[in-house]
Length: 215
Image (cartoon, rainbow, N blue to C red; front, side):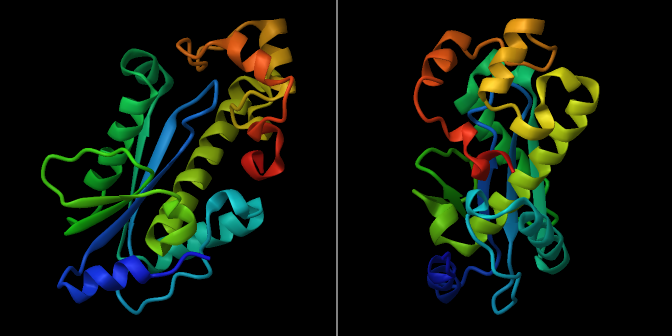
């Protein structure tokens, strides 16, 4: 379970406003990449947060509301499919993360970021591999990012119901691949993602076929 171990170390050094940052949607074939930043006040509870991929949908939705109600600040950054195609998914993810930080009502004094890649011109930061499973602030951000993106994909499902976005959230499930074969790509599909590679991956277990990725 995530803990406040990293945050406590930074609080002890005099940092008060520590933002956890995570993203959702690097791997899908369609839709945006979304990042969230969450600042939790020392000593304040935000519910039993965990890595968003481990939580059932109803629990993520509950925690999403709890985080917004109890966190000092929550920011979200969204980068659309067209920008992903133009600058690549890594740069789009970094842009979404910076956008989430810019959207915070409080300027963070330190940033903890899930993964091993991040860039910022002014804020001190630390990257944390598997941070959403280790660090409570990052776990909270992962929940906000995942739930925000899921809701965006459900709205896109209303526009393009033939692709099953409400179920697959844009990931390359068999149902989704078959829909692309039948109908072609929608306006919100990422043209820079190579469909043949996804088709080949369907011969093996795929993360998008597991309920934890699409609930």
